[in-house]
Image 1 (spheres, rainbow, N blue to C red):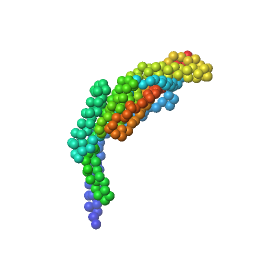
Image 2 (cartoon, helix red, strand yellow):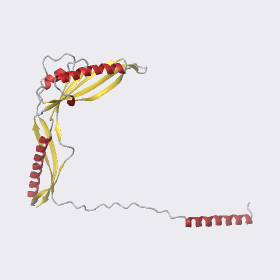
Image 3 (cartoon, one colour):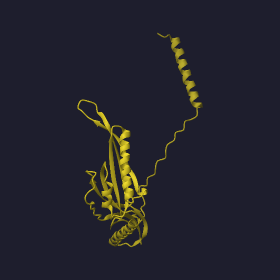
Length: 256
């Protein structure tokens, strides 16, 4: 038990510590508290007066080029062996492309990979059996008349797997410009109908925007599974059909 004197001494010490803390706090620099200003969101956003509408256009054209994708595979007991064999087969494929007059600038590699191959048995870990190399080349043909002949020549080689043909436009800018003009005209027709219904006059165009991504060119793709290294008796016949250039715009008109 503390005596009355000890209790008084402890009370005096506690009071002294409290006074010292208050003095130190008074001399310490004040900590500034910063609040980010509130973002002012307009309650009634002012929308420029006018008519906003969209216009669509689809232009159908004959393709003027084709993209051929031809792949080859090779197996080996080691990765180096599979890679070497694949390189030989791709070298033959490139030689056939050059014989067709396809320049290096219109040739590129789309896929190249070396994959380990495993054998699986129940209750045992996978066992490595070898490696498989795969390479996919893409050739651009300028013109569509010789697509069947080119495809037949390119797949005439050992290890060739699948071949695909995609008809396309080599330079779609002119067709896209025509489609965009038609889309703007379509937007104007819609805006005129809206203005007539609302009994207002239609003024000049304020803004024009492409909606979404760049104008797209729909393509047609043909795939052929190459079942043997022997060329087909007759070159494949591939109707080119038509491509669709699709454009959508958003146009804003003033009120007259």
